Image 1 (tube, one colour):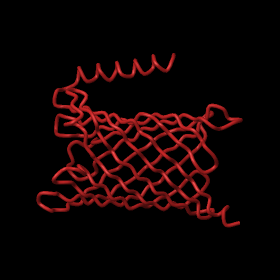
Image 2: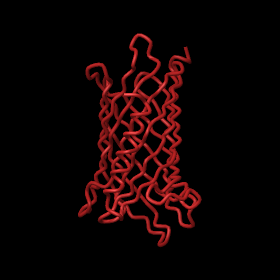
Image 3: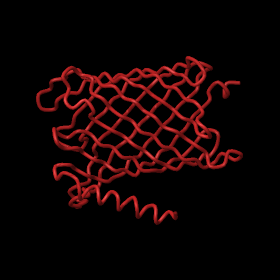
Amino acid sequence: MSLNRALFHLLLICFICIKKSNSQNQYVFGVFPTIDHSGLLNEKWNYNFYYFGAFPLINLQSPDIKQDAQFLMLYLEQSITYKIANGWNATGSYVFQKSNVNSAAPTNENRFYIQSSYSHKFFECQLKHRLRWDARWIKNPYTSEIPFTHRLRYFIGFENYFNKSKPTFYVTFYEELFFNTVSGANPVFEENWAYAAIGKKLNDTHKLEMGLLYITWVNGMDSWFNQFYLQLTWISAINWKRSRK
């Protein structure tokens, strides 16, 4: 199948889903620039900075870019990871997130998370599993209250180079499910992220990825906020242990 035909079928599926959806649901398309930087400190420890901005540009149900374009979310994550064994890691992180950034009443969130991740070979692919627990303090912009909430997230993804003898271009996919763990939460399943992209390894330090990111979260009891983004990611990984030799 050619690239043009694949894109046509993807857009057709999106159009059919929107037409058949509940009218309360929202559908937007935008861009999602991302920076993913990590550094290996020694054989056991590494750090990571993961930053992105979410910019919905068009409401897919009634497009008007002058009214629709917004800075929905700013995300700043700093984490430290300990290597437990080959493929198995434990991570702790602090996250600051600002939502509805350019509105009159933005929402600020301070978050800490702990996670365990495991990577292994699956046929020709590198498969990764991740289980994360989020502890969240979200400030209500109208009452200034800061309630404590928490949730559990499960991530599964894989990466595979097209040419193993010359690893330059690769494909990557992931799916992440979010479950509200607060007592009496309704709904329990509250959010979902899915991603598919093509990447290029520029050298031993830098890679670039471009792909489609789908995010949806509960926007009320009977509605979901569905977001389709073109995600552009710059990935850098520095081996400080090697550079010190």
